[in-house]
Length: 153
Image 1 (tube, rainbow, N blue to C red):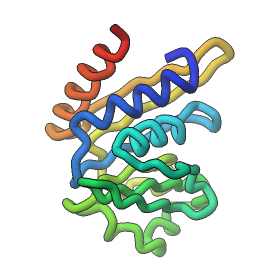
Image 2 (tube, rainbow, N blue to C red; image 1 turned 135 degrees about the vertical axis):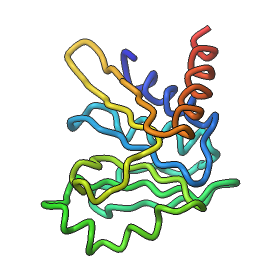
Image 3 (cartoon, rainbow, N blue to C red; image 1 turned 90 degrees about the vertical axis):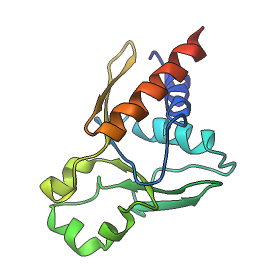
Image 4 (cartoon, one colour; image 1 turned 30 degrees about the vertical axis):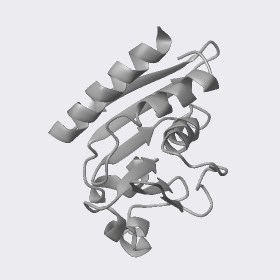
C-alpha cells in the first residue's frame, strides 16, 4: 500500500461486506492513514460530501443509503474514563456500523471489534495489517480482500 490513493482503495474495498452491527478499529501513529482509510470506506458507501477526521469533534455521523455509520476518533481522550462519560456506548449497536480511530485510548472499556486494521507509515510506504476478531469480521475481511485483489488486476 504505497500511498494515500492505495489507502483510499483499501477503504473502498471494505464497502464489500460492510453492514450495520459491525465495528472496525483503525490503529496506527499520526499520519499512518487511518482517516484516509475511513474516507475511502465512507465515500465508497455513497457519501459525496467532505469526510474529515473527527479529532476535535470525537464523532462524525453519516446516514448512508443502507447504513448508520459513526466515525469516532479517541485521540484526544486523556484516559479511559472519558469513554465512560462520553455517551458513545449507545452508538455501538446492531443498527450501526462504527469506525474507531485510536480505540486504545478507551482502554479495555471498548468491546473488541469485528475487524482491526493496523496501519504503519515509514519513509517508503504505508502498510496495513488487517485482523478479524469475530466470525462476522472474518467474513467482512474475506469479502473486502477479494474486492481489493480484483481492484489491483
